[in-house]
Each structure stands twice: as structure tokens, then as C-alpha cells.
Amino acid sequence: MPNSQVMPGLCAPRPVGPPPALAAGPGGARLERIAWERLAGFGEDNHRDAFRCFRAFCMARRQGRGPLRLGVAATAAFENRRPYTSIGSILIESGRINPREMSLTRLKAWLRDNRAEAREVMHRNQSYVFFRIEPGLRPEEGPLGNAGVPLTPLRPIAADRSPWPHGTPVFMDAELPWRSDRPEPFRRLMISEDRGLAILGPARADMFFGSGDVAGERVGHRGHAADLVVLLPVEATAAAP
Image: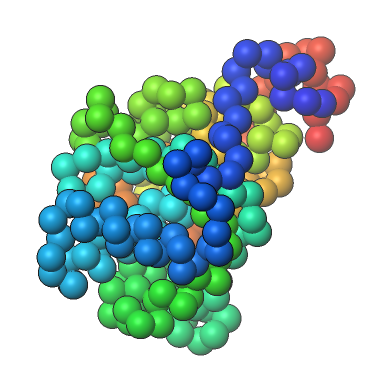
């Protein structure tokens, strides 16, 4: 059933293709050049600092949106809808990172310590999201969801829009590191407020833990199993997957 028939008015599709100001061109090399040109505008004249900022753009591309450590906040605006390839999976399959060690923290450390290889690995992912600066959003605030409002920590999930439309309520029952580094029971009603390029199928969801280093450390571990109970209007249940 189309999303608009399940919950009309709640869908907020992201435009496809590059921003109008950018001409179409080959993915990796052109986008890297654009990124470096934009970073030059922030006054980064040190190669190490510039690479750190470029890596931040790549991680934001993976996560959809987020604050940049430049005193500004950015949010996803356009996407090219090309095939998504997980750079984490590439590093595991090539033996660069042990699968038991894989986490966002470990991934970022590898990118930092292997700069030359990092560009080649990142360019193997053809899926790109183009960002825009949000002048009215403070970096300490939650990032914007698809509805255009800041996300509240531990309430929103990102899900595949094909089966579950924007605004779908989902009850989650899981063991998660949501209050400390140790997993503990997490049972609460969540709302599908966002989407992710790597989130495919009705049985997957990403939860927004919050902004900042602490939240990043907790969300950076590998996925956790969870029971998801989707709440739908009675008239829509017959068409649900």
C-alpha cells in the first residue's frame, strides 16, 4: 500500500539528484573536489584538520545528517539514489578489521589512521547525500528528521519507507546501551521519523541515540536484536507486509 494511503500528509520524500547548483558529473573525484573546495571556505589550512573535516562529511553522509565540528549544523537535502555499499563491510571482507571489533569508533579510527586507503574505500560507495547548512539550527540541538523538526533522543527511528511510512508508531523491545555502555532493557513507543539508505526491509530500524561523543560511542556498536511491534490503523492492517 502506498505511504500516502496509510498516513496521508506525513510523507516527506527527499529530492533525488544533486542540488540544482551542482552540475552532474562523475561521483567520487568530483564530489571530493567539491568537498575540499567547501572546506577551504572554513579556513582549514592544515592538511590534518582538513582531512578530519572531510572524514566528518563522509560520516555524516553515512548517517544522514548531523552537527559538524565547525560551529555549524548540516542536514541532508538531496540524494543520488545510486547503490549503497557499506564501507564497514568492505573493511571486514578485505580483512582490514576483525568483524568482532567493528564499530563506528573502530571504523573512524581506521579511516583516520589509513588516509590514503580511506579515500579508495569510501569511493566504492556510489550512494551520495548532498547536504545544506542549517543556519537556524544550533549544533547542540538534535538533527532534523524528514519532517523538518529536530529529533528527540531515544524516540525516533529510521526505517525503510516502502513498508513503513513516515510517522508510523512502533513499539520496541530490546537490550540496548541506552543509559550506559552496558546493554539493558529498553521498551518504549518509537516513531518512524527518518530514513536511511542502508535500512532495507520491514525488520530493520536505526534508533537516534542523541548528539555528541557519548551518544556516538553508544550507537557505534554493531546492531542489536529487537522485537518491533508496528501499530497501524485498522483499515491498513490488511495491506501491511
